[in-house]
Image (cartoon, rainbow, N blue to C red; front, side, top):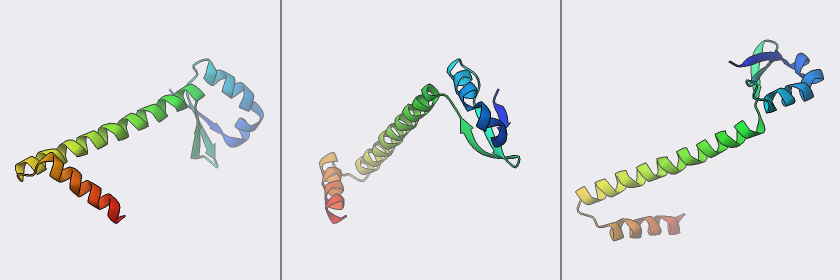
Length: 93
């Protein structure tokens, strides 16, 4: 479960909170005037989230390319035709 702490509580305890995160403590939601404004997470968790984000982008691109290939085949286009169109589009940018 996440911890909710106000910014005024975070300031004097930042070192303690960072150490707690390193020991596996739950993330801290930081609030300002009772409104959530940020999240304090461990560096390991940050790296994991970045890796998940990159993998999600790669999978989305793979899925999009598969859809393009399927539609191209249904239209009677060959993969070389699609590759040529992609290259022409890149040149136009």
